[in-house]
Image (cartoon, rainbow, N blue to C red; front, top):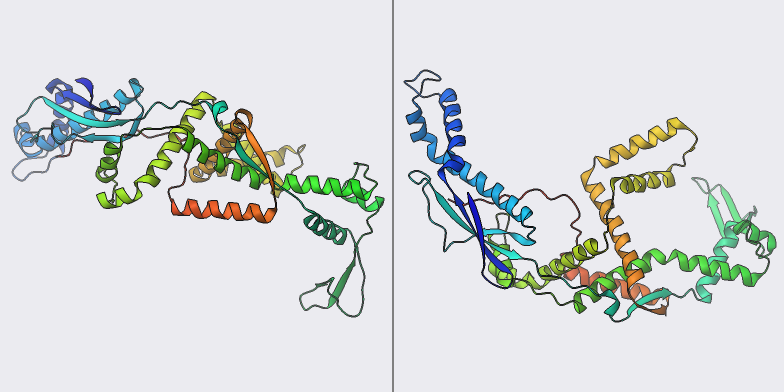
Length: 400
C-alpha cells in the first residue's frame, strides 16, 4: 500500500491511496473460510460448501469491506503520522475515483480531498486595548445591601399586627415576626465582619462595597471572556478553504444541509471554526492542560459546598470519593467541567498577556450589555465550543 499527496490549493490537498492485492488478500481468504464453515446453503452439509461458491456469493462484499477498512485505517494513521491539521473530514474525489465492482480487480487506487487548517499567528501583546468592565456599586445599591444586612442581623419582635417590615412564619400565618434592624455600630460591624476590626460607618461601607464588587467578578469575567474572543476573531486574519468546507458541510455522511442552507449559515459556521483554531493555538502555545485530578477536585469542592465534610473522618472521605467516582462516569458532565476549567485557564492567559482598558459602569448598564451579547449569540446559534476531548478515529470509506 502506498499513500501520496498533492497540493491542490493554498489550503487543500488530494491524497492518493494505492491498495494492492497483497494488502487485503490474506484477510479476505480468512473471511471466506469463516463463511465456508458457517454458511447454511441447501444441498451442502455445514462446513462443506466449496470455497469457490462462497467466493462467488460473498467475495465481492468481503473484498469491498476489507478495502474500506484499509482506507479508513490508512487515512487516519496518515493524518496522525504526518501531523496534518485537517478541517472537516476527507471527501472522496468524484472526478478521479474509479467505479470499482470489487469483483475482477486486484489492485485499487482511491483519491480523497482534504481541507487544511491555516497557520495561526498569535501576538497578544500587539492587540489593541480591550474594554474590561468594572461594575460600580453606587450609594443606592450600597444602601440596599446594608439595609438587608441590618435586617439579617436584627432582632425579632412580636406585635399584634403585621407591618411592611414584618416576616410571617408558619403554614397558616399564625406567627407575625417583625424585625428590628440592627444598629449600625461596632457590635454590628463585628458580627458581619468578625476579626476585621471595623469600627466606623465609613470603614464598614468601604468593606461592603469591596465585597459587592468582588461578587460581580464571575459575571464580569464571563463578559470579558466573550469580549476577548470577539476581539481575537476580528483582529487575527484567518483564511479558510471555503469551497472545500461548503462541499464538506453538504457531503459528509451526517449532513442534512442543502447547499442553500450552507450558504445561509456559512458565516456563523466559519466564525465558530475560526475561534476553534485560535483556541487550539492558544492551548498549544501556552501549554494549557486539564488533568483528571483537577476535574475530580472540582467535583469534590462542589459537594463540599453542599455537604460540609469532617476532613478528619476517613469514612466521610471515602463517601465523597465514591460520589466523585459516580460523577466521573458521566461523560457529558465531565466534559462540561473540563470545558469550564479550560475556559478559566484561557481567561488567566488573557488577563496576563492582553492590555485592558477598565471602564466603570452601573449594574444596569452591564445587564444591558450582557443581554445584547446573549441575543447576538442566539442569532449565531453555533456556540463557540471546546475541542479538548479525545477524538475517535474517523471513518473514511469509498462509496460503492
